[in-house]
Each structure stands twice: as structure tokens, then as C-alpha cells.
Amino acid sequence: MDDRQRYDRATAELDPPFAILDMEALRANAESLVRRAGGKPIRVASKSVRSRPILERILAMDGFRGVMAFTLPEALWLVSHGLSDVLVAYPTADRAALARLAASERAAREITLMVDSAEHLDYIEAAVPANSPPLRLCLDLDAGYVAFGGRFRAGALRSPVREPVHAADLAADVAKRPGFRLVGLMAYEAQIAGVGDDPQGSAAFARVIRLMQARSARELILRRGRVVNAVRQVADLEFVNGGGTGSIERTVREKAVTECAAGSGFFHPRLFDFYRGFSGRPAALFALPVVRRPAPDVVTVLGGGYLASGAPGPSRLPQPYLPPGLRYSADEGAGEVQTPLLGQPAEDLRVGDRVWFRHAKAGELCERFAGLLLVEGDKVVEEVPTYRGEGKTFL
Ligand SMILES: Cc1ncc(COP(=O)(O)O)c(C=O)c1O
Image 1: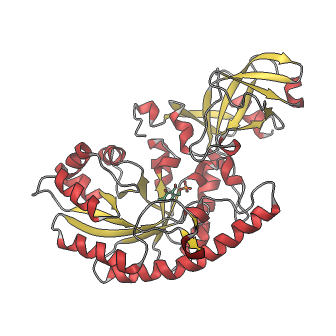
Image 2: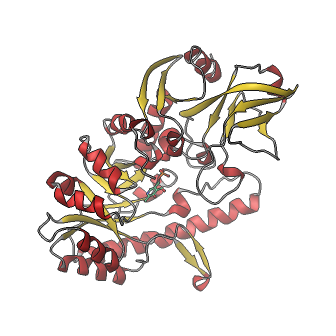
């Protein structure tokens, strides 16, 4: 039985739209991430999962340790449900959440905040009472690649802290403030981890990406190592985090890195099909029903416009996945309430049949569905809530 037959059979009694998680594929993807990490622990990036029961199941597997959360309210919520060691990977300016963090001994013990400036330190200090337990901090380092005297830059615009001297200065500033403890350092090389080195289309573009990534990796090994050494003179670091799904094996090779992060690799969304170093199995899919047939080789499905975040373009569209060979209409793309799909496979689809899609990114899919149907073989064995299904929309 092929995947389409399995998924159709497992969900035959249900009416789409709905989302499924193929548990065998999820486990295989998780095992592959662990193999690639070569013994270093993987911190699970929650933004790419966005379902608490699934996060818990992943964390119960060997090789995973801690959560990389995306907001402080999310981290507080996860900790209130028993999760531990939660690193908030993006700075917060949420005063109420900071006050809640400072008011809870357990939350202050389990949650680590991200900072990259004295301005952040001042802001957090102003938001929490003076006698609070010390808050755990992680310093975010710019891991972007800069060339041609600063005229070329690749990588996310995140932290202003780049060189060892900047990092050591900020670490020294933290050390002077009794309300904080610097416990971690994070440097996320988005230009390697999040950019496929096997893009479709232009071979010349692929060569440019590979060259940029090779140079960036070489530069980062040295700089990340020097920054970690400089910060360790001032702070007792518990962890140094780097990388993501697309870079694991490269990132963990660096001695200075104690753990890597990964999230997208669990669901293996469309954007992660374009890497030479690894492959995964599409695990999270959503089904939309065929609701009309405007022409013999066109079907229209209900909804579908679940675009992914990032620089806009065709790569942000969901992929019509099964049956293979369907494509969007250039005029309509994926629509708010209906999506025409063109191509020969449409000839065999009837009203009520389903088309299976993959999201371009991973966890954003869960903002569209209240639950994930867990598929084992050709059966739905359970339904678990997404963050949305638990009434939580953190971003
Ligand atoms: C700080 C940080 N680390 C790691 C990742 C990698 O996550 P993923 O494995 O989902 O690509 C991200 C994603 O944006 C990130 O922001």
C-alpha cells in the first residue's frame, strides 16, 4: 500500500480539512537527527512542532534534551505543564510575562531568557521586583556571514554581538548585576541551517550557496570558539547552542558547541527537501476536500492558502503532495477559501476526494488546525491537540 492509500484509508470516515502526523515517519526523522548529532544533545525547537503532546513524545526519546521556545508566555505555559530546561530563543519585551517568571521559583529555574544588549538587561531589571530569584540568561551571538568589507551579508539579522570582545563585555555587564546569571550562549547560523544547498533551478545559484556556506562555516568555527573562550573567562556557561535541522552534523563538529537545536526535521516540510546532506520523510500533512471540478483537468479544493512566513515567493506555498503532479493556477495560487489545482491527476479526482498537502515550513501548520491525527500504518490511533487546539496562539 502506498502512502496515499494508507492516509486515505486511515481517514476514510473523516471529513477534511484536517492534519495528520505519520508517526513512523516522525520517529524515523527523529532518529536521523540524533544520528547526525553524533552524541551531542538536541534541543527541540518548539516553533517547528507547536503541539505539547508531540514535544513531550520527542523529548522522551534518546538524544533530545531541553526545549527551544519562541516566546516567554509559551515557555511559562510549557513549564507549568511539567516541561523543563526551556530556552526562549528570541528576546522578550513582555513585562507581565517577566513578572510571572520572577514570581515563580520553578519557572526561574527552568527558563532561560535570550539577551544581546545592555538595553535588554535594563529592560528586564525594570520589569521584575528587586528581590526576585536570579534569572537565567543566554547571550545571542551574530552567526551571520559577512564578506567584502561588510557589503555582503548572509544570515538572519539578530544579535549585534559579533566579536569576542563584545561578547565578553556584555558577559561582564551581566556578572555585575545580581539579578542575573549568564548560563548559555547561542549562535544560530541561519544561512547554513535554514538554506538548502541543493536548490531547484539554477546550478550557478547552487554553487554560490555552497561556496557561501563553506566560507561561513570556516569563519564561524574560529569566531564561535573565540567568543566561547572569552565569555567563559567571565561566566560559567552550562551550554553553547548552535545550528538547526539543516546544519546539525556541521555544527556539532565544533568543539565549542555543546548542543544543537532542531525542529523542522521532525515534520520534514517542503523547504527541507533541498539539502544534499540529509533527507527526511514528510511526516505532517494536511488534507483538503475536492469540492468542485471547473474543467476536466482541474479540481478545486476548499481553503488551502496556508502560506509560510519569510520573504514572500512561490517557495512559501504549501506543496500539493498526493496525488503527485498537481500544480497551482498562476493567477490564484493557494486561496483563502478555495484553491484550483491543475494537471492530469485532477482527471481522476471526484468531489469528496482528498488532496494531501505539505506545508512549506513546519510548525506553522499547527496554527491552522486544532489537532493532529496520529497515523500508524493505515490507522488513526489518536488525536492530539496543537497549541491552537489548547487555545494558545503565542505568535
Ligand atoms: C535560534 C534558532 N535555532 C535553531 C533554529 C532551527 O530550527 P529548525 O530546525 O526548525 O530549522 C531556528 C529556526 O529558526 C532558530 O531561530
